[in-house]
Image (tube, rainbow, N blue to C red; front, side, top):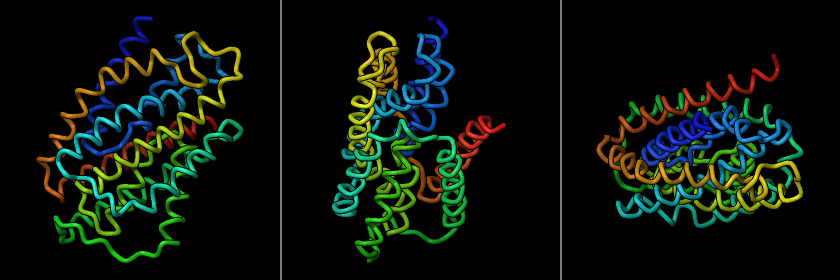
Length: 273
């Protein structure tokens, strides 16, 4: 139990810092870390991945909410850019979260990892180009944005992440500077994780072998500890982000995406070897 508590505390501190800096919920960190920790509190192997995903989404409601609020105070959220994008993505998330337990996530995680590598490399290249600190949204078609929203909602839910790793590059590509893209993505993440959590609660209510104090596929004590230690670190992350230049922020985010995606790919490949 001591190993479990120490692991959760350290994880919470890391999630808060990364969430504040890059606007992500931290699912790419939480899920791999929970996989060796949850068996220590008697989560059965057959339900381990879904318990990790559900608990991760519930935790990310808190981390993304705190991060989004801190970005709102710094005027880093552009509501106009997501007025159609966000509702479409949320409907996709809610529908996908109801059927996720019937799908093998490892194939999708591998695809998701390669997807993030592509975005990371692309952002590294763009970091050398001239940039503007003002919002200059490009005229992209509603149909194209809808397809992107569906794709991000689908991949984020099945991958157990808040989607910011894909939302930030998308918003940056359509004209938002990095700080606004990160802040706006964190706002989207609040609702994405909320909708996904509801789906995992409903899906897990009929499972009889889950540990005490579970609500569906959500382990409430784990969510509480992670949230308690991630909240103060989120503000630290936002403050660090605010001091970085646009170029440095793009480079840092791109490197983070590449490292995270390679780690997720390694985890997924282990199951095939």
